[in-house]
Image (cartoon, rainbow, N blue to C red):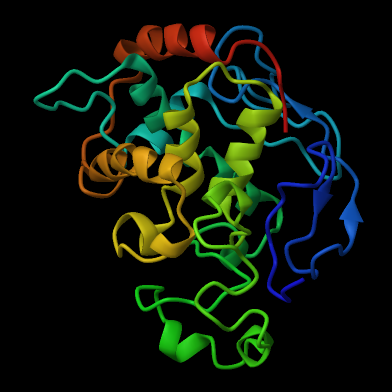
Length: 262
């Protein structure tokens, strides 16, 4: 397997693999269960807090405490909460705006920045031209000296589909696995938007077409549409949490209610 494999598709959701270890590396204890990350009903109350928050019920150290208001501000501040287009958008599109970066909570538990944020790209094949810093940071990657992983296709078959491709690890894949494990009742388009919104070499650079299936190409316009609101609608004004809360709580109750396993 390629030395930079980071994907979690095959590992149990109730365990975690240290991103700093090689594939098949150290398996760490589960971090417990967390109340649903974007709800207000029945949320955990952390020590000394007078408002609902998110809390890990297991693991070392104090529980994570994020108020619902803080969560809305963090997630919706950089992403337009109600995008306006010439065509109506489904309500789940708005929920994706709230969910898409929640995987970044990994950074609050000691994961290095490179394992949480940044553009993602396939491993097991030659990095293509639009991969950021390709020419200045990949020279020590042993995969490039291995004929199995240094060609355009590498270890993959032509048009195998992105669901069969191993991606560099980040918050996209983590949140996708959370959604999948907890059986969110969102359409496939929403899962694609979450899983590949940082895959800029694909949805913006038009690279890796040799790996794409017809399903990937059908989903690409949705990922590109979401990218307009993820990247280009930064707003200096904080959202009105009290005004937005009922709307987003309704979406939560519709598509991902209850307690989530993380």
